[in-house]
Length: 239
Image (cartoon, rainbow, N blue to C red; front, side, top):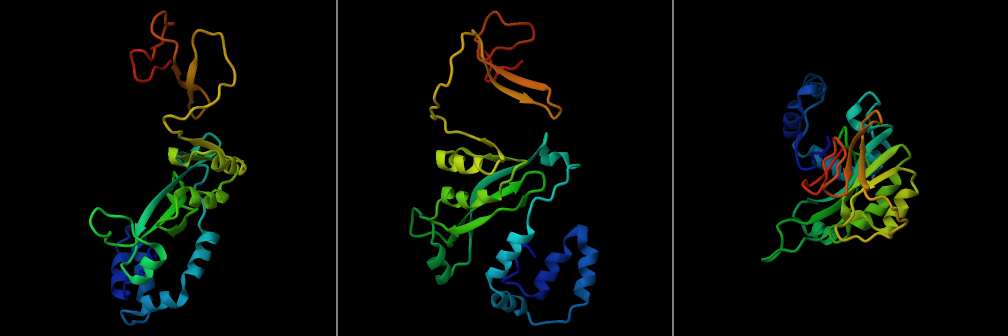
């Protein structure tokens, strides 16, 4: 039912649902008890229902579901989530083109109207629990500002470099979630403090128990301590 089967009848819906191995027998039992209906019944019912009901159901019901025992969904004490954007093609109709628009094309216009979306995803389960959609011309940064309200304390949010900016970063910090966002290549950050040490450690990675897993050194080649590989001869040098 994730797709809603808006353009399919009972026969197509039954065929697709019956192919889900994990719940095949249960679905078949439930569908067997349904009275037969015309092929257009689901389409008409979906149109009568309207999108507002499904949107409210999504907001109220869809949320991260991973339990603490599912280690792939957590890093130390944080639930790992990712914010990202994409586009989806919708049916080629005048109404959709008016509402959502079409992307540009080198020749003529693109085949289908598209919507733009930004969402939060629980990495361990791939649950999209914070999706916001709008017309194609609406930018990802605009949509992201509406998505961030779903962040909470206890989450660590990953995001690509497109999202990094002062206003969005400030808004994300206010949610009390931990942030790990990429920055653009030519981003210039202010120097907060200088140190007199000859070598520095540029990045530290900890394992799940808090032990040091890797540290990038920028001290240059020569006079390395035992066990050290300097970054002069390697793309990334680590202890």
